[in-house]
Length: 63
Image (cartoon, rainbow, N blue to C red; front, side, top):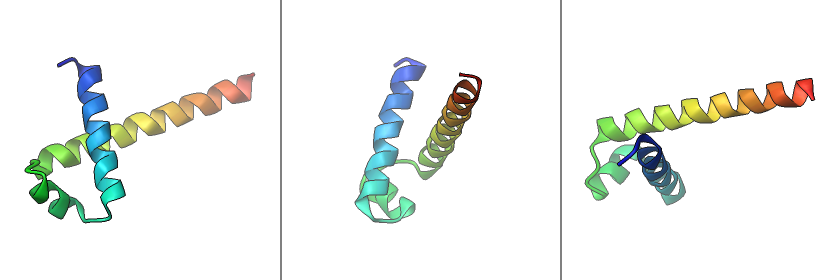
């Protein structure tokens, strides 16, 4: 699995948790997901999203 595919996969998992309305530990337990892996990817996705937002702001300011 490429890094891009992993990012897409974990983005879907994080979104499922957020839409589930249950806590992260409970979601991980119910879905047999390692909490540390989930937390790692959640932070990585959050960082990527923040970088994309910052990049869009720079593009819009200079346009």
